[in-house]
Image 1: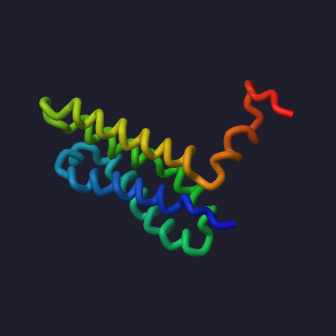
Image 2 (image 1 turned 90 degrees about the vertical axis):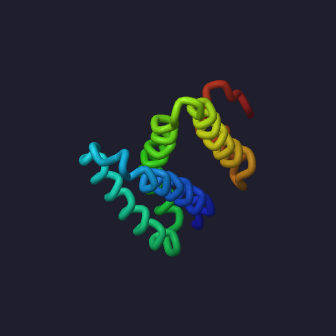
Length: 125
């Protein structure tokens, strides 16, 4: 089975890594976190290779690296200067919401993904 969403996840994490590496001076005090980010970068590189052959496995493993996206987006907000703080929050929320809408609204399995898990409010036949 081929997962077409793996490239979107890889690009999201790569975008966050680009932000983190762009702010590398501000991450100098976080030595343990920098090691984790470096290991996540290596893992993402391996996932790019793995996604060519086993894209569904790479897609599922990529979910475990989503904390890097959260670190990158959080650092945008944390490191924004005062006049641009609201704009950075708006950008992060808009980007995250756009990804959510695209994932659950326009994917090929979106219509099937809402009810197969037995949601409690679903009383279908």
